[in-house]
Figure 1 (cartoon, rainbow, N blue to C red):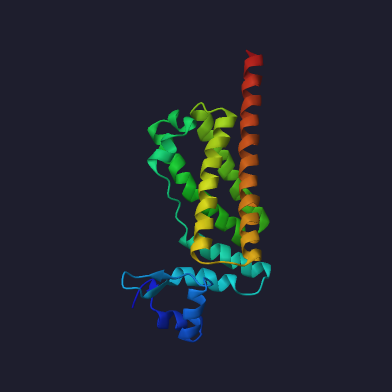
Figure 2: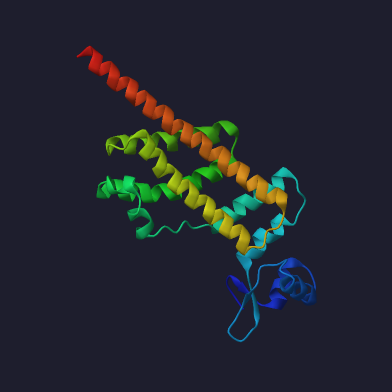
Length: 213
Protein backbone atom coordinates (compact mmCIF):
# COMPACT_ATOMS: atom_id res chain seq x y z
CA UNK A 1 0.00 0.00 0.00
CA UNK A 2 1.36 3.41 -0.99
CA UNK A 3 0.69 7.00 -0.03
CA UNK A 4 -0.54 8.23 3.30
CA UNK A 5 -2.51 5.07 4.17
CA UNK A 6 -0.69 2.12 5.72
CA UNK A 7 -1.62 -1.47 6.43
CA UNK A 8 -1.04 -3.06 9.82
CA UNK A 9 2.34 -4.50 8.79
CA UNK A 10 3.44 -1.23 7.17
CA UNK A 11 2.48 0.71 10.30
CA UNK A 12 4.53 -1.76 12.34
CA UNK A 13 7.54 -1.11 10.10
CA UNK A 14 7.14 2.65 10.52
CA UNK A 15 6.89 2.35 14.30
CA UNK A 16 9.58 -0.31 14.59
CA UNK A 17 7.43 -2.75 16.56
CA UNK A 18 5.77 -6.12 15.94
CA UNK A 19 2.42 -6.06 14.07
CA UNK A 20 0.70 -7.63 17.08
CA UNK A 21 1.85 -4.66 19.17
CA UNK A 22 0.32 -2.27 16.66
CA UNK A 23 -2.89 -4.30 16.70
CA UNK A 24 -3.06 -4.18 20.50
CA UNK A 25 -2.30 -0.45 20.68
CA UNK A 26 -4.97 0.27 18.06
CA UNK A 27 -7.59 -1.89 19.79
CA UNK A 28 -6.79 -0.23 23.15
CA UNK A 29 -7.26 3.23 21.65
CA UNK A 30 -3.62 4.15 22.16
CA UNK A 31 -2.92 4.45 18.43
CA UNK A 32 -4.97 6.30 15.77
CA UNK A 33 -6.64 3.73 13.52
CA UNK A 34 -9.31 3.63 10.81
CA UNK A 35 -11.39 0.70 9.57
CA UNK A 36 -12.22 -0.18 5.99
CA UNK A 37 -15.68 -1.39 5.02
CA UNK A 38 -14.29 -4.89 5.26
CA UNK A 39 -13.12 -4.30 8.82
CA UNK A 40 -9.40 -4.09 8.08
CA UNK A 41 -7.24 -1.71 10.11
CA UNK A 42 -5.68 1.17 8.22
CA UNK A 43 -3.32 3.82 9.55
CA UNK A 44 -2.58 7.33 8.36
CA UNK A 45 1.11 8.02 8.07
CA UNK A 46 0.65 11.69 9.05
CA UNK A 47 -1.25 10.72 12.20
CA UNK A 48 1.38 8.16 13.14
CA UNK A 49 4.11 10.78 12.81
CA UNK A 50 2.32 13.17 15.17
CA UNK A 51 1.62 10.29 17.59
CA UNK A 52 5.24 9.11 17.47
CA UNK A 53 6.60 12.55 18.33
CA UNK A 54 4.13 12.88 21.20
CA UNK A 55 5.28 9.57 22.70
CA UNK A 56 8.89 10.69 22.96
CA UNK A 57 10.42 12.38 25.98
CA UNK A 58 8.57 15.30 27.49
CA UNK A 59 11.35 17.75 26.72
CA UNK A 60 10.27 21.10 25.34
CA UNK A 61 12.01 20.55 21.99
CA UNK A 62 10.07 17.32 21.48
CA UNK A 63 6.75 19.02 22.23
CA UNK A 64 7.70 21.72 19.72
CA UNK A 65 8.22 19.02 17.08
CA UNK A 66 4.73 17.71 17.82
CA UNK A 67 3.21 21.15 17.26
CA UNK A 68 5.13 21.66 14.02
CA UNK A 69 4.16 18.21 12.77
CA UNK A 70 0.51 18.82 13.55
CA UNK A 71 0.61 22.21 11.84
CA UNK A 72 1.82 20.49 8.69
CA UNK A 73 -1.42 18.51 8.52
CA UNK A 74 -3.78 21.19 9.78
CA UNK A 75 -6.29 22.72 7.40
CA UNK A 76 -8.72 25.33 8.64
CA UNK A 77 -12.15 24.48 7.27
CA UNK A 78 -14.57 27.39 7.54
CA UNK A 79 -17.92 27.19 5.80
CA UNK A 80 -19.73 30.10 4.22
CA UNK A 81 -22.53 29.55 6.72
CA UNK A 82 -20.21 30.07 9.67
CA UNK A 83 -18.96 33.38 8.30
CA UNK A 84 -22.37 34.58 7.16
CA UNK A 85 -23.61 34.20 10.72
CA UNK A 86 -21.08 36.77 11.95
CA UNK A 87 -22.32 40.37 12.12
CA UNK A 88 -18.87 41.82 11.45
CA UNK A 89 -18.58 39.76 8.27
CA UNK A 90 -21.69 41.42 6.83
CA UNK A 91 -19.91 44.79 6.85
CA UNK A 92 -17.04 43.61 4.63
CA UNK A 93 -16.80 44.09 0.89
CA UNK A 94 -15.78 41.21 -1.40
CA UNK A 95 -12.07 42.02 -1.35
CA UNK A 96 -11.99 42.27 2.45
CA UNK A 97 -13.84 38.96 2.79
CA UNK A 98 -11.22 37.26 0.63
CA UNK A 99 -8.46 38.85 2.71
CA UNK A 100 -9.98 37.66 5.96
CA UNK A 101 -10.33 34.14 4.58
CA UNK A 102 -6.62 34.12 3.77
CA UNK A 103 -5.85 35.40 7.25
CA UNK A 104 -6.55 31.94 8.65
CA UNK A 105 -3.70 30.51 6.60
CA UNK A 106 -1.50 33.46 7.61
CA UNK A 107 -2.18 32.70 11.28
CA UNK A 108 -1.03 29.10 10.81
CA UNK A 109 2.11 30.21 8.99
CA UNK A 110 2.76 32.85 11.62
CA UNK A 111 2.47 30.26 14.37
CA UNK A 112 5.07 28.10 12.63
CA UNK A 113 7.41 31.09 12.51
CA UNK A 114 6.70 31.86 16.16
CA UNK A 115 7.56 28.29 17.17
CA UNK A 116 10.56 27.66 14.95
CA UNK A 117 12.37 31.02 15.07
CA UNK A 118 13.81 33.19 17.79
CA UNK A 119 11.49 35.19 20.02
CA UNK A 120 12.14 38.51 18.29
CA UNK A 121 11.21 37.12 14.86
CA UNK A 122 8.11 35.46 16.28
CA UNK A 123 6.91 38.61 17.97
CA UNK A 124 7.57 40.62 14.81
CA UNK A 125 5.41 38.20 12.84
CA UNK A 126 2.62 38.46 15.41
CA UNK A 127 2.86 42.25 15.43
CA UNK A 128 2.59 42.37 11.62
CA UNK A 129 -0.50 40.16 11.64
CA UNK A 130 -2.17 42.28 14.32
CA UNK A 131 -1.43 45.42 12.32
CA UNK A 132 -2.97 43.82 9.22
CA UNK A 133 -6.15 42.84 11.09
CA UNK A 134 -6.50 46.37 12.44
CA UNK A 135 -5.79 48.05 9.12
CA UNK A 136 -8.33 45.96 7.22
CA UNK A 137 -10.90 46.36 9.97
CA UNK A 138 -10.45 50.11 10.14
CA UNK A 139 -10.74 50.41 6.35
CA UNK A 140 -14.02 48.46 6.50
CA UNK A 141 -15.39 50.62 9.33
CA UNK A 142 -15.25 47.82 11.89
CA UNK A 143 -15.18 48.94 15.50
CA UNK A 144 -12.30 47.71 17.69
CA UNK A 145 -14.73 45.18 19.21
CA UNK A 146 -15.79 43.91 15.78
CA UNK A 147 -12.19 43.66 14.58
CA UNK A 148 -11.38 41.69 17.73
CA UNK A 149 -14.35 39.40 17.10
CA UNK A 150 -13.09 38.78 13.56
CA UNK A 151 -9.63 37.87 14.83
CA UNK A 152 -11.02 35.60 17.57
CA UNK A 153 -13.18 33.82 14.98
CA UNK A 154 -10.09 32.75 13.02
CA UNK A 155 -8.01 32.17 16.17
CA UNK A 156 -10.65 29.76 17.47
CA UNK A 157 -10.88 28.04 14.08
CA UNK A 158 -7.11 27.50 14.14
CA UNK A 159 -7.25 26.18 17.71
CA UNK A 160 -10.08 23.79 16.84
CA UNK A 161 -8.18 22.53 13.80
CA UNK A 162 -5.09 21.85 15.92
CA UNK A 163 -7.16 20.01 18.52
CA UNK A 164 -8.78 17.89 15.81
CA UNK A 165 -5.34 16.87 14.55
CA UNK A 166 -4.20 15.94 18.06
CA UNK A 167 -7.36 13.95 18.74
CA UNK A 168 -7.21 12.15 15.37
CA UNK A 169 -3.57 11.29 16.06
CA UNK A 170 -4.43 9.89 19.52
CA UNK A 171 -1.96 12.22 21.25
CA UNK A 172 -2.31 11.51 24.98
CA UNK A 173 0.78 13.28 26.30
CA UNK A 174 -0.31 16.04 28.71
CA UNK A 175 2.96 17.85 28.03
CA UNK A 176 2.36 17.86 24.28
CA UNK A 177 -1.21 19.14 24.72
CA UNK A 178 -0.14 21.76 27.24
CA UNK A 179 2.77 22.95 25.14
CA UNK A 180 0.57 23.20 22.05
CA UNK A 181 -1.99 25.35 23.89
CA UNK A 182 0.67 27.57 25.48
CA UNK A 183 2.31 28.25 22.13
CA UNK A 184 -0.96 29.05 20.36
CA UNK A 185 -2.15 31.36 23.12
CA UNK A 186 1.25 33.03 23.44
CA UNK A 187 1.35 33.76 19.71
CA UNK A 188 -2.27 34.88 19.37
CA UNK A 189 -2.02 37.07 22.47
CA UNK A 190 0.76 39.01 20.72
CA UNK A 191 -1.41 39.34 17.61
CA UNK A 192 -4.41 40.59 19.60
CA UNK A 193 -2.37 43.15 21.55
CA UNK A 194 -0.91 44.45 18.29
CA UNK A 195 -4.40 44.74 16.81
CA UNK A 196 -5.69 46.75 19.79
CA UNK A 197 -2.62 48.98 19.97
CA UNK A 198 -2.92 49.73 16.25
CA UNK A 199 -6.57 50.68 16.63
CA UNK A 200 -5.61 52.88 19.55
CA UNK A 201 -2.99 54.60 17.41
CA UNK A 202 -5.56 55.16 14.67
CA UNK A 203 -7.94 56.69 17.17
CA UNK A 204 -5.28 59.04 18.54
CA UNK A 205 -4.43 60.09 15.00
CA UNK A 206 -8.05 60.81 14.17
CA UNK A 207 -8.55 62.82 17.33
CA UNK A 208 -5.41 64.80 16.62
CA UNK A 209 -6.59 65.64 13.12
CA UNK A 210 -10.01 66.67 14.41
CA UNK A 211 -8.42 68.97 17.01
CA UNK A 212 -6.20 70.55 14.38
CA UNK A 213 -9.25 71.38 12.29
